[in-house]
Length: 124
Image (cartoon, rainbow, N blue to C red; front, side, top):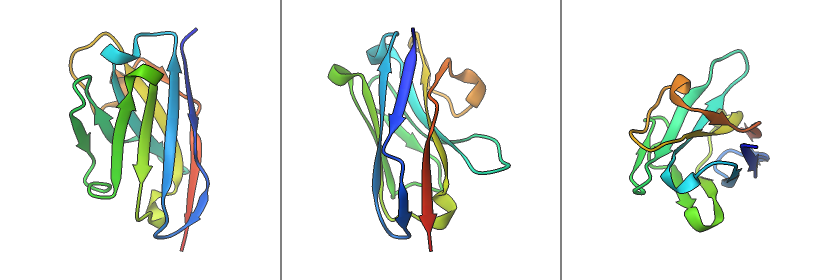
């Protein structure tokens, strides 16, 4: 069965750092575009960052310069290093996969597989 399992969410003070992890199984991780989305209460899921199979990365303007996405294909694991956290970063963070190769996307509907989410709470 396809699984994406996130971990690393926590409560942290503004200015702090967290590293999220997403362990994937049940599909070919190395040929899939991977992404992080986040959802604040009462909002839809917003795209945060994507990483291509080549390792090329893209970021939403709101996190550029603060967050870093990376992948370890040998471990089927996706990471999100989050530095200089702000209260507005508070959200449930979701790992997502677009399998089968091809382009990456910032659209929620383009992703095939989703994790359960991990909560990040940033206090001022």
